[in-house]
Image: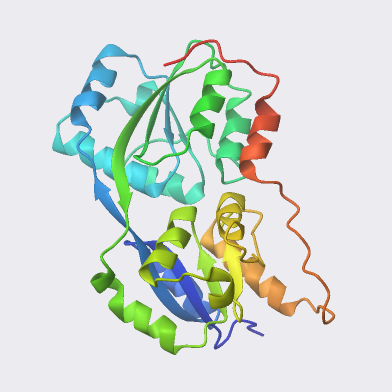
Length: 290
């Protein structure tokens, strides 16, 4: 039995999409409309990164996304920067991110079971971070909760923006917009607050609650859920692990779970990640700031 067979699902994503994800949708029998709501562009941060590598002994290198690895490695190679990955511990937010590191001959030491910033912080809570230097390649719009959490554990955090996120030009997604407007959409899966906000802008949606009224909504995690619900749109599914495959599994479970008519939808058990991080860190105080 394939509960998503012939269901039409819109997946908002960055410009690049792994073939593995596309194949996964085919395997569950869904009709996929892949909507590139983000455009990723490289940032030349070579001067800052060179200074960090020359001035500091890096104890930990942390990757929170596949793009962070891609553009960090690209920057290292293009600018011939010297870095010895064997002399530092490398942490990744999840298994797929770790796999990309291994493809680039970067050993990985730390991967949380919970693929999130909170999961990484839980791992680092038992690491001896006092007076250690952590290098954090990330996007130009990276959130600060994780960085601040590391500081509370006593680390000195060096951030370097290696890529930026932009909204694509409307003409580049004209075909996808037409498909969405002319199709009956069963599910929308949003993979970040930015993909949701860009989706609204690209389709010129002024009343999100009305636009999504006849569809179900899945959010990749609690942060994305919060951004969606601020526009008065109900989120039906949030997976326990923040990955597309887990989101699809959660949608399948939702579709096979009987619900009496007019019964209110249960709220997700997980509190917003930002609040959880504050709870985990409240007894730890930062010793230094950078």
